[in-house]
Length: 155
Picture 1 (cartoon, rainbow, N blue to C red):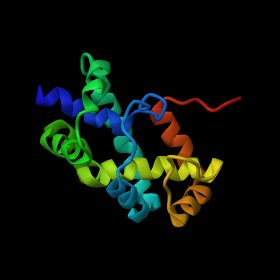
Picture 2: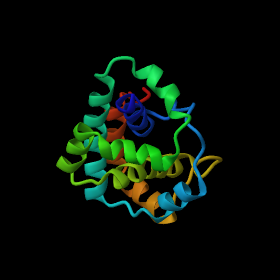
Picture 3: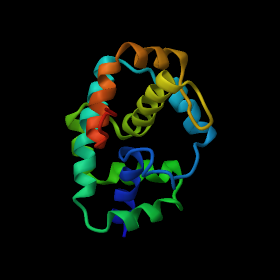
Picture 4: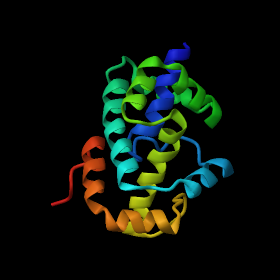
């Protein structure tokens, strides 16, 4: 049971925003952590690589959609603890030089920085000015992130 909830916690971080629509809005603590997170080219590269590996890991599990529904009842701290307890997930993160906290804060930080860089800040999007500038400067990383998510560029 605990492993099932863990996979759902990982899904909340790695799946594209449209798929994650059922996940609860950010808490004030999450918003502040995203604002405080400083993106760099090295960090972003590690996050994107880990996202791809984590997505493959999670999607390889049975009944992943049902597990998404179970995530609604967990707090951010519980989701972080579940990831930290999964040896496979932690191995993916360690291999990419990331802690569980850095991953669960860094992935949404990166996603929202790219959204804000292309569409501006809007409801539900949190990004520091420095991270928005990073995203504007490193647009090539957006294509990498989208390919990990399975998003194809518009023609």
